[in-house]
Each structure stands twice: as structure tokens, then as C-alpha cells.
Length: 369
Image (cartoon, rainbow, N blue to C red):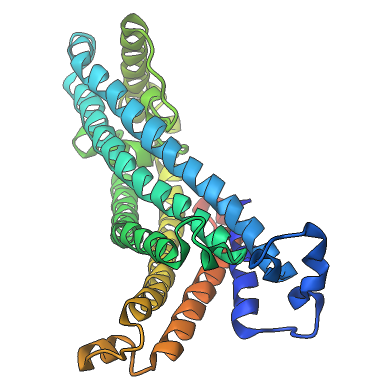
């Protein structure tokens, strides 16, 4: 739903930027006269109302998503992970070194992930809240001083730009991480092809163990909406998790049915070889997200720059940042570039999954069938 609304919002903005369909009801204020809006809000066109509605949706949904990520996925989850780390000694008494290492490694990763989610959530919520002034701008409210006027709008846009900058960095890091995961999957597949007596425990890490499982390793503490339980219940869950890991490891290393274990290992190798292709495609998609959001960042930055330049065209270096364009050209071009890039992004989000399904090669098992 969020992607569909984002597509509509920015497509509407592109229509307004290019002044498409000029002779239609989109620009006829007589169709909004029944709202009896005061001056200058009565200049709002049907197209601007459509934009405002989708912007208000972003204001609510993006702000709430950021808040939930910051609290449930960040602060609450971090508190839970820290409690579990304190109870790690209970696992040591009931499991071997491999299980201990897997649990400890995953807990430490989840701890860092929770800290990152808390920071990213704050950034996302900042972007969502800034949409309030964009809604006001669509209704021409920023032509008054009711919510701070044009300076407040520029401040809101500046907050969005500042918040987007570290998110661009994390997009690159996500792409690098996915490329690394694809390489690990291919490496594990090669090892599994050579395994005759079970998977060697030396290759079992948090990442490889999760990759080996068809649905991944999703321990009870991994949920974004993790809530605090009482300490006794948490201890029981932790011990149950360790026990399930032991059972899973035995099916890979000590299964009595050697034929079934060998077949399982070879099927997993085939799955990893095909899944690695999808993971690599997801990495390329992250790079596309980075490029599109980088264009949006640069484009909207030009509008902020032009505001502070006023009538001044700026120094040679500033004109270089504007790519040699005049202030008015830079403002329009930057705004359109941002709107267009953020129109393409939801299209990529919506249509990449079926595309990946088409591009994903058949597994060895499927070929045999």
C-alpha cells in the first residue's frame, strides 16, 4: 500500500511539474470551491488536493513506521537482547561450544541491529513528520505564517535531506551485505557438494547456519515487535532455542539415516546456488534504490540552495553545483528530478519481485524432474 501511494503521490507531482493535461479539471479551482477555503487556500486545485491527500498519508504512515522501528525494533528489542545476554550462562550449562557460539554470535548481531534500527527509525520518523509542511504547501498554507510560512517549509525540507543522507549510506551497505551473502551461499554450495559424511561444524557460523535452513534461522528474539517477558519465561525460551539448534545440527552432522542426510545436503546445495542469484539481484536493486534516492537528494537540495541564494546566482563553485543552470532552472529541474526519481522507486519495488522470479534459475532438483 505504501508503495502504491508513493507512486501516486510522485506521479501527481510530476504531472504538476510538467503541467500536463492543462485543460482538464486537474487545474480548475471551481471544482474545489465547495470547500469554501479561505484565501490563499482557495487557490488549491483538484490536482493539489490529490497530492495533499497522498502527502498526508506519508505523514502518518512514514512517521508511525519510524516510531515503531525506533521503539519496538530498537529500544524494546535492545533491552530484551541485553537481558538474554545476561542469561547466556544458562545456555553454556546445557549446550556444546558450537551452540553457544551460534547463540552468542546471533545475540550480538541482533544487539547491533537493534541499535541501528533505533537510529534509522529516528531518521525515518523525521522524514515522515516533515511531510506535514508539504501537505500545507500543497494547500498554499505556506503562503501564510500559520505554520511558519516558507521558511518552515525550507526547514522541513532540510530536515528530510539531513535524514536521507545517512540512509543513502545504509543503502550502499545493504547492497554490499547482500553481495557478500550471495558469495557465502555459493561458497557453502561448493562445500556441500563435496560433503559425504555430514556438514563439518567448522563452517557453522550464525550466517551459514541461517543460510542452510530453508526458511532461515529466526530465533524468538529476532522479531521487530519483540516485547519483554518475565525473566523465567525468557530463560525457558532461550534453553528451548538452544535445544532446537542442537536437534537441527544433528540432522546435518549426525543423522542416522546417512542416505537421507546426503540427499538433504545435496538439495540444499542446489537451493543455495539458485537463491544466490536472487540475493545478488536484490543487491543490484539496492544499488538502484541508492541511485534513485541520490538523485532525489541532489534534486531537492537544489531547491533549498536556491532559496538561500535568493536573487544571487552564487559563486563559480555554486553555479557548478547547479550544473550551470540559473536559479529558476535549477529549482524546477531539481524538484522534477526528485519527483521523477521517487516515482520510479515504487515501480521498482512493485515489479522487481515477479521479475526476480522469472530470472531465478531452476534448481537442480527441478531440472531432474
